[in-house]
Image (cartoon, rainbow, N blue to C red; front, side, top):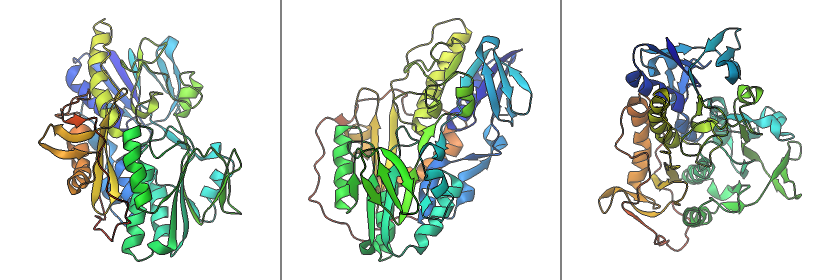
Length: 429
């Protein structure tokens, strides 16, 4: 029997396994390797710090997320031996493969920054929201905070969901405003980028919102250390930002086995062909989602689009045909902006987020690069789509390639800056 082996049962690995279960003939086995008992809906973590207590809706037993035909090996990967087509597991067993997909995601590396790991487990002033436990701890900290300096710092790019730090600050602005504490709380966004976002038109819109909401922006800040005793962060050029509560987005890296196997770059991400998703230098290995070194966003929509392309390329490779260059970096995501509104962006490797209507020109119904209540509702609805359509590998009516339909290169008009009122943010997603 021939074998397809997938390392990692996150968004990309799970949807690919379920799609391949419908494509591969019966003489193929499909095995997915992941040590975690539950599948985590990561977009839901964003709402937990602001009072949402629906952790159970963010988790689902992993066995329920996989097609019956997919075998789940609940173990950690120790090492891959590409020359032998063999994967060694931490429990001492080994798995052979004909084709391998690395979908092991990205991990938080607090220890990469001096002082950060100790501060994160210290007196409760340093937090994260990229993990379930971190989001819970941060929820308790924000609930008891009456005032002070709240700093969100991105240590280094790339990170999972690069717009999430701004979403956190927009929701924090709304959270403190609705509780009558906003005037006593200073919000600061500290980023290694030279602006709010990497794409000019989107940067203009998000930069406007940051200013309009009274959030300070500290750019080109390369984090050197966290001084928990002085409650401040310092950059390599000796700039200092003090905090009373620090929300850290630490350095991200690939799974340890990627580095141990010689498959990764300096951060442990797999060097991957940007259009075919084949691991560079390895004919029988492909990579998917956050595990890749691609310049596309590390986001769920990207894993979805990549998964559809990789499904076809695996079938082509198995048949002895060359993989197609089918992935164009397509990304779309909703950006929560507080007050029960959100922005939708849609872009790829070559085209920045543009204004317009999505997915149909003139009809929409969703606005691009514009705040709307409907976009917020779209983000809330995505959880149902995730569990019931995307993760099971069902077809979604959105092309893997970005379309220019409904888009315009005319920059959206922005109103005069004004700090918004209370708003009506939903408590959960």
